[in-house]
Image (cartoon, rainbow, N blue to C red; front, side):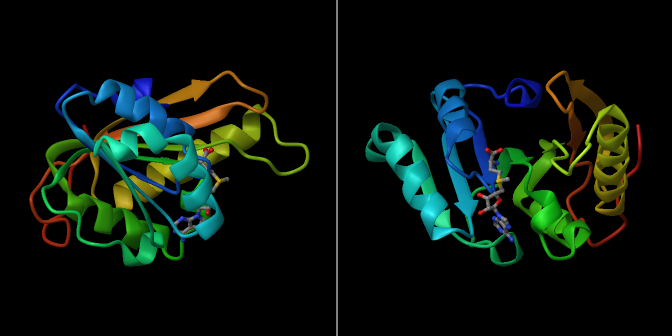
Length: 177
Ligand SMILES: C[S@@+](CC[C@H](N)C(=O)[O-])C[C@H]1O[C@@H](n2cnc3c(N)ncnc32)[C@H](O)[C@@H]1O
């Protein structure tokens, strides 16, 4: 997932719903001159991810906060990239949350969303449906230029990468391309 996001050394990156913080580590490894922020609503996950990324936090390269997707703090400068893995399905009103994230992304900034269905009997078809759901959400939120990838795990992981096309997500909305 992190590799699909094409993180560059100077990027400012946000991960929402980081869980144990494994992707945060990888993001920090790539954004060597940038900054990685993360938010998760679980105190347990913030503690675990903070332990896992203790060195990068001490070095001031990673900041993790406890905050729900529906009440994200102000992060300062706009982000170049946003990541959300296996968490969008837990958010209240996910399309509205994705619009919030568009507000935090610079124009041209990238977002990567992933979903690995875990319901009993989940298989390729379940993943295909999850991919369509993510595509629909990103379209509703006005993200453009999307591509979909399937990571060949068991069950497969649906990934959608899209771009923030405009300055004002609550204005005209985006266009596909
Ligand atoms: C299935 S885990 C995925 C964790 C991590 N992204 C990964 O792939 O390993 C879902 C994560 O989303 C977080 N989460 C669920 N609802 C959330 C919300 N409304 N706002 C922020 N985080 C949320 C949970 O605390 C948990 O860490």
